[in-house]
Image (cartoon, rainbow, N blue to C red):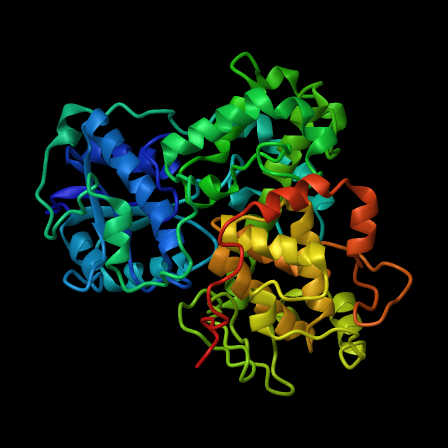
Length: 517
């Protein structure tokens, strides 16, 4: 530790909350042991990938809530938002130089691993990474898995023990850790009009904030309460039914989890209820989707999605960090064609030149790579450019509706998101170009985008975490096939179409996109 340091710094990059946060707990523990104040720093840059008014708004709502929570707890909180007059470059290193130690979030994807490597190299104080991604630490989940069925028993085996080590719901800040310190920059004014402030920034203003959608822990806890009291009882039967958010059984929590405004711990606690204990676990159902956590089928079904399937994406990224090396670089390495230029930061190589490795080559199982390669030259009945996809201008009304929902609301219904991705594969020149389109559209518009599950969800459309399916088909090969016609037979879509037709702003105002030169 830096004995001359003025404080212990907690740099909140992804776990952006002052409750149920293992990283915050550890930083506070260090501050108490060293007799130093705790400083919580939360920053927001202008140049993160796909920076927009929509993403900025959601995060600034969270910073507003964190400022109120910090005042209540008595902890020093430094919110920083980059502006042309106050650049972010070098600021974290400057703060670290005055610290005894830096504690930050051990998040396995997006730009965070690169940030953590850089700060560890550039500063002379200890940098401590804390894994607060899930209930069972990612480091305890073993090697990469090819299916959720392989990870589920590992989670179940350790769940009861992990439950004993949950983060503190709301930390108590000792007097010594409350000492106030003046920051070396101008704090962001959390009381100002957020919309007016964002309008002054040089970010993508065309991807606007979604009217009526609030980010932050206050809204996150309200959404969690609404789900538990109003939707959980019908989750098993209705979660896949496309409809307006207020009428379907989806939780609506993914954006709050993605931005760290809620923790999966808090979600599990609320869903299981105050009286639940690990004594209710049925170890006879270890590794099974049903009956493990309790006897309630809706609770088991939801937690299997929220814990097992979510952890599949996080664990996949965690175990592949070393293998993929520089995949989290912020710098774009992609110029796929004159129509598609993707600011991909997640993979070591993303060049569509003949013979070059693509994201799909680096991630998919051999069977999926082989079958997609075999069918890459197949004739496509429909082909669309990026601008046509982005404008929801295809021949398929259901696909267009899902894309309009994404553009207007920052979300797509869970089941339709799978269909949405599958059809982009079918209607693109190559699988690699389809991946580029999906990465861009999802990360540009989805409030829960740029997340481990964003990438594994997209890659599932190409065969990741799946198996070969017969019969072999054009374009798809043996990758799982989905159609809008079958979806229309499976669900009653009238309510969904009514909801989509009532949306404002479901089409971009211009065909121009970030891919344009």
